[in-house]
Image (cartoon, rainbow, N blue to C red; front, top):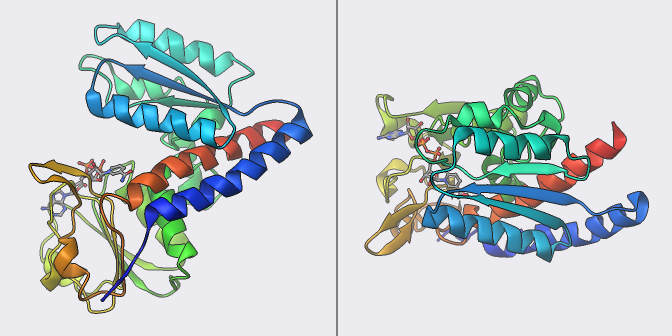
Length: 283
Ligand code: NAD
């Protein structure tokens, strides 16, 4: 039976460590760390995410600025909001909650965020630095997954890691982070042939697909480490991409959904905000 990786508890540990780093920052630089959040429209899931992010910001002692624009806001209105935050010297991080309503070009809006305030690690400059192995802001979810692995002292060097999913915000940066840790990385996706065979060779298996209970026990190697990134809303509530109940009997570590990667993503957003603030003071 697997050890269950408690993302909630680990996220609390990250946030509690941050609390004292935030106090030290304030004492040293004489100012608050400020995260700004832009929410456009009335997507209920986005509203919940933003609320949780703002609550967590307060918990660690950072300040937040929240901008809520209506569903019918124009691209220009959203752009002007982001532009004003971009030049505001008091703002350390800018988070534009995605998805934006239809008709607004997300890439165009995100490009208005200066790379040093890109707390989500989505911009080309930060993704490029990750590719080059340079210090940078890494997308919160894969950063959270890596922290989960490290905090559980899971050996990564030389291991076969399989990432299912190749999105820009999860799969690709996840693969780069594992490569940096000297894993032998395979990225699988919707066109992968023999997915089961690929997965059953994985010492570390990361599922970031968006399909409920997609990864079944017959796909995993005995003793593997399985991290479930998926968040799927079903009639039975929120479930992950992994058939947790059956897979947990076969592997050494597994993260649950909910209570796994989700809380870690928020904790790493705050860590990224802190790191952005620190870099801005030291550049
Ligand atoms: P996405 O839709 O952008 O990417 C999904 C990936 O899965 C694609 O690369 C696709 O090729 C792959 N895929 C789809 N069907 C497949 C199949 N049959 N076999 C193999 N691969 C297949 O999604 P995303 O933004 O990367 O998110 C993935 C999941 O993670 C979603 O459930 C999302 O809600 C969740 N998510 C969770 C967090 C968190 O904080 N826990 C953060 C981001 C995303």
